[in-house]
Image (tube, rainbow, N blue to C red; front, side, top):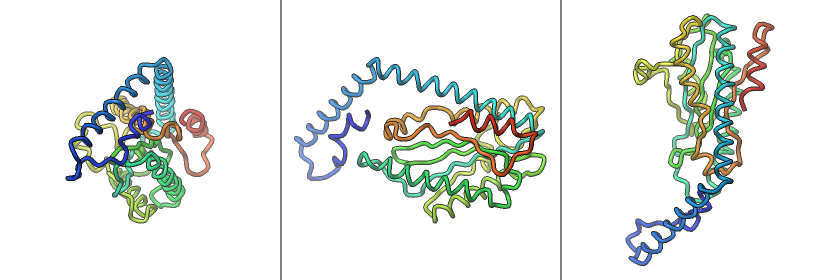
Amino acid sequence: MFLDSFKPLLGVEMESRFATHAHGEDYVRKLNQGVQRVREQVRSEAFGRKLESRRRGVDKNAKSLRDYIDALFAAHGKLLSVRVDLSYKNAGQINHPGVPREETARAIKDRDRFFRELKKQPFAEHYLGCVWKLEYGLFRGPHFHVLLFFDGAKVRQDGLFAKLAGTLWGQITQGRGDYFNCNAHKERYGNALGIGMINRSDLEKRALLQVAASYLVKVDYVRRLTLEGAYRTFVRCMRLGRPSNKERHVDDLCSRSLG
């Protein structure tokens, strides 16, 4: 809807020294027409129904995510939560409608390979599961917000684990990938820190983890606008290896709740 409304402006360069006053007036006219088309569509009943459906989906995923994290704590006395953002170094501005789909298709292939290779890494021995979300930024391109869970009774050094995951992403993407290690910058979160080592009995930190995780189920309106439903809302949690009987309930929640 969004890109269709502004298609007449795609590829138009207004910083050219050869642009005339008439060019500028035509650009503004097309811009205003695009704004009017968007206004008409967002006021329609069809758009309202679609928006309400998105909100219901967010609420459903949020509850599923809360249940999943609670189930992990029920099975493990400590969780080591690791947050890493995976992106690309040279993501450019959208300049034609095909760009988001092409870039996102490549990113999904990279993501799939990343998780396949993750299970082969020594640091993933005590990996329990993850939640990830795909977003698309107009200037940042496709990127993933990833929350990894490890058995806190077996491992520590969450900042190192995030670094290792980010390094793996760089290898998977053959140097095209970039990452941000959230666990290495905990001071940014202040009293709202919801990542790192969290004990089952620490209800305050568990609540903060739920808040941090809830960001991953929010609707990405930029992605919705640019991809126009070509892809589902990407929120997943996965396990590596074969679960024990004790943890099958966690796997059941994982497989049926998110996605």
